[in-house]
Length: 266
Image 1 (cartoon, rainbow, N blue to C red):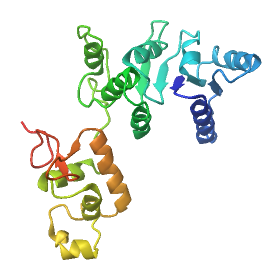
Image 2: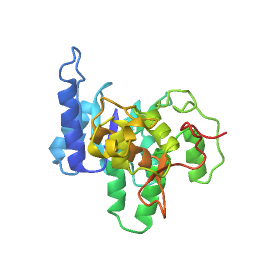
Image 3: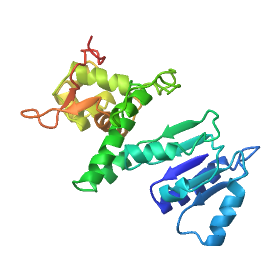
Image 4: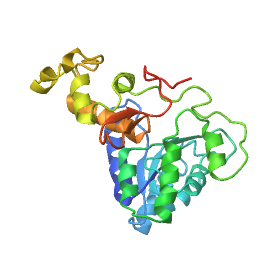
């Protein structure tokens, strides 16, 4: 397995954390390594001696060094961070399966990727990363078709992405309840107040406003209010919720085309 990381520190931290998590296995992975320009020539040679002949080693590498790995039978390429462009993603995932046998690509995306993008200011680098994040956030569309469209090619038949083979991740915990609540009460609550109601918190504010009688009150009882608010903000980033504009600034609203129950409209 080859894992691409944005920074040297990221590669080292993920390798160490993976070692710790897998240390208790009865048959531990032989070789969880990191690889980047900060290593000496001898250290890099040692990593290569362990990784190249292995069938189960995991290599956490920065882009330049991961691309330089000459190993044809890599079965899985993982991006722990969203790569800087669609072109970089295609090149890096191409390190898997060069022996002609089936291989897998896994792309992880988090709010940290948005924070990194926002720190780039305005310009071509930000635009390229924004397109890549948009692809990573795509929900319900064939991955191969989406990639082909982004690079201006004709869509090809899919060899089995997670959307087409039905293994794409299901709705996140709490997603259904949150979307249903916002669809029932559009442009009425900001994220913090909606989280309070969904978590079923009895506070002077909820009691004074008779919010404990609302549809959806307590649907996520047992959750911490902060966890509900975090889930709401994640749905906003994913585009499944939106923040309403004037005159309802800051209020939550369903995305266009969402039915009253929180489902896409027909």
